[in-house]
Image (cartoon, rainbow, N blue to C red; front, side):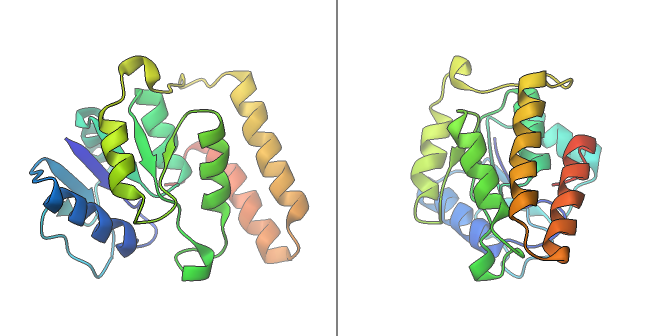
Length: 187
């Protein structure tokens, strides 16, 4: 099964539309999407707007591949369970998020070989196909009690982001993100 998720905070129709088209062109009937409050309704995937945490974890455990926005909660859960994950970051200039923090997160996790990144909907089909062909030993996995090196890397990334924050609102958004990352409250 392929699980597509946009998290619980905002719709991401561009991702859902692209994944739905992938399911159509590949004749896949085993794709499930969590679509939040999006206006695009999938025609070739089963879906639910929201899943409670136990339902979401069950879907992740059943999935062979996860396709998601570049939210920390989705990435961390996939890594904890050793599931290949394809992330397509939300873009600030498309008003899918306030800024490009997901682009930065995707780049950082990709540089460590932990996620497969589709920069946009045009790259998504190829990246899903690639993730579906990954071997178990190719998949990044972290322990729930993450190693100190990973924690240090994430802290460094967030600290650099905080230093680059120019407005009080931007700085507060990043501080909130840091708090949520370490408490696993972010999708």
